[in-house]
Length: 101
Figure 1: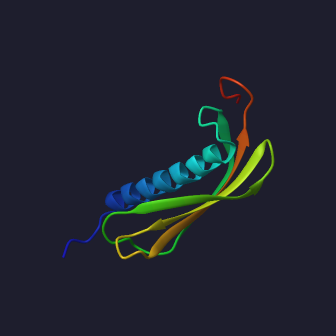
Figure 2: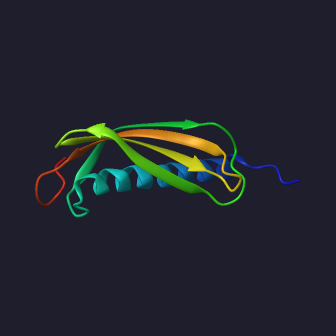
C-alpha cells in the first residue's frame, strides 16, 4: 500500500479548497442572476472531516445575505457520497467592472 507523502496530501487538500471555493462562488453568482458581476470573498472557512475516496463533487448554496453581501456554504462529497469537507464563505458584490481591492 502506498503511503501518502506530505506533498501529495498538501496537493489533495489544495484541490479540495479549490473545488469548495468554486462551489461557493458559483452559488453567490447565481443568487443575483448576473454571472458577470464582480464579487470578492471577504471570509472563507474550511473544515476537513476525512480522507476522500474516488472522484469528488462540490455542492454550494446560498444561505443568506442582502444586495451587496452573500453568505454561502458548500460541501465536498466523495464517490461514496460521504461529506469529506465543508466550507462557509462571505462574498461582497462589486459595482460595475473591475474588482476593487
